[in-house]
Image 1 (cartoon, rainbow, N blue to C red):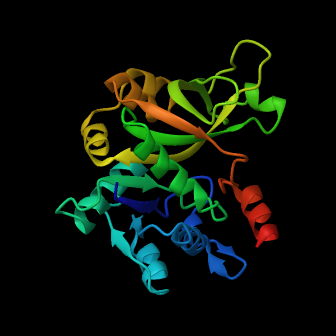
Image 2: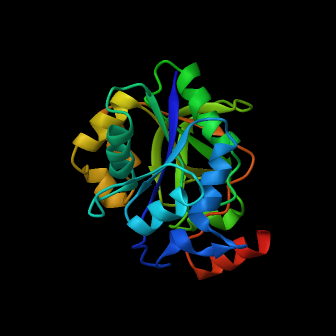
Length: 240
């Protein structure tokens, strides 16, 4: 398997405008995410929705592709960047890292790649962690993964994803929004319209499940910090 890491980023975040260029310890957030991804040892590029993001990455000698700012999702953005960077299909898998996770462990990218390699039926790989707090169970901003997984196993097939409260007292799996796609699965996914469950839950991975694509999830130790609002940004600055 020959994977490429792509990091989608755009300036028009509603809760934190110009988020990719937010300063964290003297570096733009997208630069921190890019440099962290390089530590995985995999090839990395940024799929940028704005020229300012391209300039930030190329300014450190990195690779970035300017994509249509009107693309509806990060998945569409990475597919556009993939076609621009690799029209001949050298890369048969894509790891979609998030530009707003500036301190993500580079092992998260390789974990997705390993899951794609090790599970022949896996079309899309993703990650989960145990809940950080019992309040996660009722928090609609925390996406929960429902997995077919035995106790002690480190990966399992995803049955569903939801923002809703799950029944019962058992801990829940907290979904981490990092994905690995087989190239043909990414192409099929982006060609399909939003599905009913995707629209209802506002979770695009449900489109993949409704299409019949197989999603598998690997268990990681802890969810990386995701910068979604000013409070998250201040937390990130304290870590820098």
